[in-house]
Image (cartoon, rainbow, N blue to C red; front, side, top):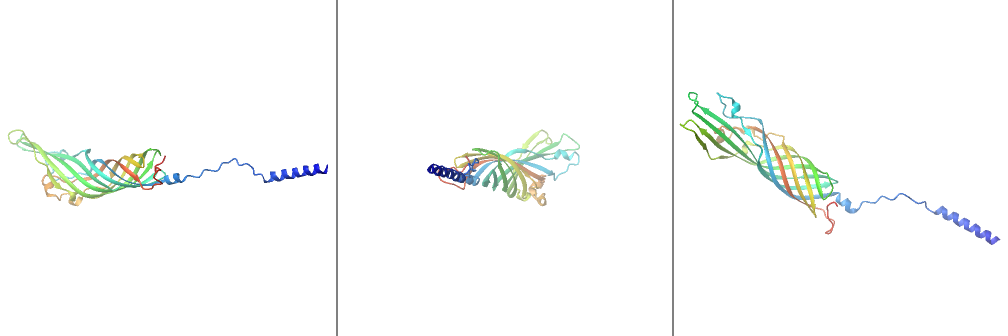
Amino acid sequence: MKVILSLTLFILISTTGFSQFKKKPNNTLPKPKPSQQNKFLEKQWWLGFKAGTNFAQAKPIQAYTVMVPTNYAAALNAKSYDSFLKTGSQATLEATFYFKGFSFSVQPTYRHTRFTYFNQFRWYNTENSAETLELRYDQEQKLDYADFPLFIKYDILHDKIRPYVQVGIFYSMLINANKAVKISGTDYASGGTNQFANEAIIVGAKDLFENYWGLAAGIGVNYNLGNVRVVLDASYWKGMRNITNTKNRFGNDRLAGIGDAQDDIDLNNIVISAGVLFPMRFLSSNFKTLDR
């Protein structure tokens, strides 16, 4: 009987002691730690090259002229500007730092821009209105700039195809400028109707323009192709400063001799580019640096 009581007491003590040391089950799972790969992909440096075309709009702020008519309205001699008609070109180096969907991009660019305008003049004999001379001046301006834009981009999607929006600011330094003027017209004063067109007058016009700055905004898309990123973007560059050198407005004798004076102008551009970017940070040869 004593043996049975002792055995029973031992079992009760052992059960009580075991239950005291038994840990309660934890129903909350520990949060998974972010992998080193995902941490690595949160930021990246990209370096590459882009090229493309641009379309310029010269928007006159204030018009100027050398010749002022006295017997008809001056508005008939007003210059007419073509907007986004002539194509230019540009080449860009891009360096971009990406962090969690945002990118900070520096894109030094060499840009060749063209825009055109024309105006007309009319002379006639006050004693014989049939004796009339009509002239048309077609002018094309070619400007070369070194652009220094800074863009902030945001990726709308985080996939193999990544559309994005971008805004930025730029400063443009004038490298060179040329102007070509073609004169054509109709002569009614020589006893008949004679139409003519002279060869274009081409002059260096760098002294007629200045550096300027502006704001930019646009859209684009990145396509991840292996470890290479293919880029296509389009942006609108809004000039915020007069590009005309006002001190030299009448300084070119050849242009002043044909009645031309440079207007005050805001220069705007639609810029379209395509290119490739290469990542600067790699994990290993068998791991893509792009987000999966």
